[in-house]
Amino acid sequence: MLFLSQLINGLQLGSIYALVALGYSMVYGIIMLLNFAHGDIIMVGGYIALFALIAAFPPAIAILLAVVGCVLLSVVIEKMAYKPLRSAPRISLLITSIGVSMLLQNLAQYFFSANGRSFPSTLILPSGSVSLGGLSVSYTAIVTILVSVVSMLFLTFLVQKTKMGKAMRAVSEDMDAAQLMGINVSNTISFTFAVGAALAGIGSILYCCRYPLVSPTIGSLLGLKAFVAAVLGGIGSIPGAMIGGFAIGLAEVLVTALGLSTWTDGVVFAILIIVLVVRPTGILGRSLIEKV
Amino acid sequence: MKARFQISMPVRYCVNLILMIAFLTAGSFLTQSGLLGRAQNSIIIQVGFYIILAVSLNLVTGYLGQLPLGHAGFMAVGAYAGAIFWKSGLLPETPSLIVGLFVAGLVAAAFGILIGIPALRLKGDYLAIITLGFGEIIRVAIINLSDITGGTPGLKGIPKYSSFLVVYICVLIACVAIHMLMKSRHGRAILAIRENEIAVESCGVNTTYYKVMAFAVSAFFAGVAGALYGGNQGILAPASFDFMTSINILVIVVLGGMGSMIGSVIAAAILTSLPLALQAFNEYRLIIYALLLIIVMVFKPSGLMGTYDFSLSRLIEKAVTRLKVPKEEGGVYHDDP
Image (cartoon, rainbow over all chains, first blue to last red; front, side, top):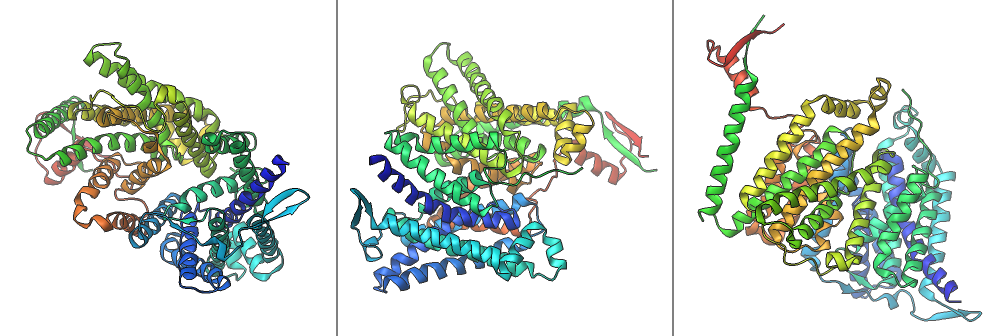
């Protein structure tokens, strides 16, 4: 029973990681950028929701504002900081994203102070729990897992069945060829960033409901873990990001349950290293064949 | 056919040696005379070990063309190895200092080989992630092995060996060693791997050997820098070797220009002393830092110096050739084909 409740706990954490990991994975799939600023977009989403709730907006509007805010911010960052570097070496792009991440963190620190603020999570989700055959599961856990599953199904539909999804897949396959086929590459890339940011916005609300404290640095550790999840599952692959997210969430919760909470991060990275040594492109990653 | 002026190698070595000695004397005079405040002095020392870190990372990032994100891990290993050796007091002061630095470097290099062999099987971003993972594991291990390392509160009471002279002698050794490595046959192999790994491999170069070697040399100097860091602070805490430290070193290398040693040195000096220079804008300091980083990257993606490498002799040669000064002592004219 204890194991089952830990399992649900792990699934809850894992589904948040998976949502965030999808953002990393999609952006990497399309422009080969490890977007370090993604974690900080989550932080911004948390703050938007927090202030909307303080200003007594209804919870639904607060969630919507957070998601829209994340999307807008992400698209603006893409247009201003990443687009001019499209033909630059990839490492310059990487450093720029690190710069953006630092900028967001420090702006947040300047405007909202470095101290965390408590997030009124009970306004969004009631704090109670339901008992399922003797197993008590909190509403937060149920809603988190459900929302993530629905978002991922929606994303799969978006990528596999719509015209925009087709364009995204085409651009990630071969950018030049896609352009020759009349796909607007620039818009497709912005759209990918927007979708990733929308998922991050949802993730930020769910994360703040689980750990009700918003501070300028919440995004960096969450981002790093989600990023590890994306790589573990095979970066660029959507189902891979989900598997990676759940794996990291479960591993983290189980290690903590065993009473080794200080080793948690170490174990997470050890799993990553073992997987990468055995399967160098992650669990579901496509292996690249280098041609001479 | 244009005549080109060349300075012969012995003269070059002599000039460089004299300049280095002059630099060390002037620097140690300046720091000891009390002309500079305490804050300036500590910044100068900090610039020193950031130069070592940046130059050593540049070997792997700029010359070998790989992207490791765990440089702080090697620094941590070296720092703790050096500090524990110094604290043990096995040797009197001066030998202890020198042997301690070697111990720090060798332990870090051993970790570099240990990590390099599995990590270098991977390519590009996967290599970045796996080294990031190793860096974090080292940090978590340091926190948890508190019997040896002092855990989260830190390792205290490290002898303060890192004077200006000690730090900058190490800086010069690191720069000269990496420069000479890159001018050698091994250096050409490393550069060739960056340009085209498959082509090099088919020419019969053992790429794994050279990659691991570059990794180990890089880790060695990172370890020395770590030990100097410990000898400057007197206390080591695992929090100072986190992921952001690795990122800061990478930022120095990329901003300076990957594959340019002078770029790394200049960027290390600028970025380390920037917080001091921006003290008047204390609240906006880090915002300005981040903005500068983005702006430089957007407008000059190859970094401040690109791949340009500074050579005093080459500058003199160029100037002399341009002025068409007649033949001087120690100089010979060569005909350019």
